[in-house]
Image (cartoon, helix red, strand yellow):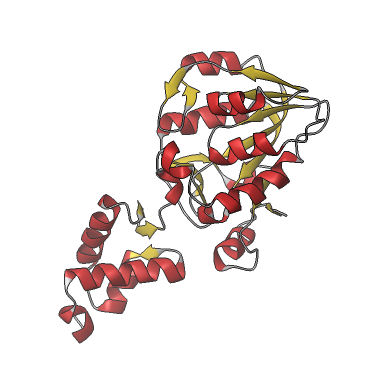
Length: 259
């Protein structure tokens, strides 16, 4: 063990792991252990503690940045509002006149609903009561609401009833909300059943576009929704020359710059 690793207190080790996570976008336990002169077991134990505190997302061999979008709906309403509005304005243009679109739940999807042009004539299918309520004020958008068990964390319906109702839908586009977009982890969210619901809805649309404001780029959550290559585009306001976005582009992710 080198002098640096041997002298580090637990709090110092964890601060260093968070620094690596922030600057490099991931922690590989073996590499960091070698760099600091620590055992892998020590690094893995520290990562478990950080994950328990909600400060990282553990994966095989190390950890990834955790997404701030895993907080409950009320908290997320105040997170990165301007970023979400930029993404929403671009995503709203993907719903063409005369088309049928599936609009996911979540705060960015709600911003999309509010960004739709007042003269748009289209059909929007949603499993989000909040999105449906916002669209109730739109004069020319037809709204279809998919029922099911209410997942209160995200204020969307899910489960077998939702899947049965979705089976009758054929849509042109699905605007998908996720909590993490990472080059290795793919498109992720914080709940297994919610991830399954999103896959069900994606299967009912010709094209799927991801709503990914900057705080979600380079972050990961526990449950994969889809691989990066299974979507038509990822609408984001994150700088495309940033390290997390470059990693996604290198992985073949179809990033669409929000404007």
